[in-house]
Length: 410
Image (cartoon, one colour):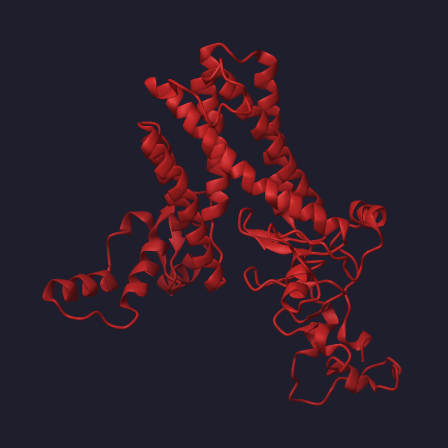
């Protein structure tokens, strides 16, 4: 009896920093990461014998490796996403490789964006979430700031005020990025909707409410969306979507005034975080442009800042100056991509059109875009330039507003 009581109390014991519950629901320890590797042993055994692998064997091995790749944490070891590792390894290696020679720098500056775009379309096609882009963005910002402190500031060409300006820009960019990541405006199901979805095999409970809109109390309990509300009813989230809301297939949630899913923040951009999203991009662009100008003035003092990226003689004579010059090129490519995104967002807000609505209108040939993806036609909700921006700047960012229930639309 004592042994049974002890075994029953074990699952309720808190996990230590190196313990975790694996994907099979068993409590295990990080020290046992190489133990009980049945799937890996079978795969290696078949590979050594030259036999074909079973269907799904490799996916099982990957799942086991991902489940056991953890770091110690309070109240249980945390799982490490494998998509975080490539940016931490590839970015420093490629940038330092590009600083060895001009030809290598050109190859890296061309190949790195191509590799990132290929990975974006590969993950976007599967509609899966990945921390690769968020980790790449954060590590790029941190690594560029680290090189600025270790390679540019010691040269003596950057003053204390300029260093403080760059530091404040980096801090505020990270601060508003954290605000952007909090909540894009997720729609929460109404309590009545949860009750409506439950099937009671017994008789319906007695309801004291009176008939509503000609519907009896018993029918209200099992109400379903009316014909007019079916187009706004999300079967996945079990909520009625207000106008301009949408369901994100990557996040798996409905978002108020859904603009798009941004892979660089690994979250949606919606009503609650759209302003913080634009402010984050703007702060990053200002900090990046200012930092690039300071670096180019230091490594190419005799050249004009505007033309130093295109022509800077003697920059590859020293590895330190070549590394700073290569990082300036990398920052310029990132800045150009975010500048295009900011311009597109500016036009979308000016016409009161979300990115999701713009793409739908483009597919239906109701809107027009030129080569750079800018909208040149007004949207359905447009109230003029000033009216659209006033509505955007003053729209509520609260996500606790009342949600619609099914019985409200019957």
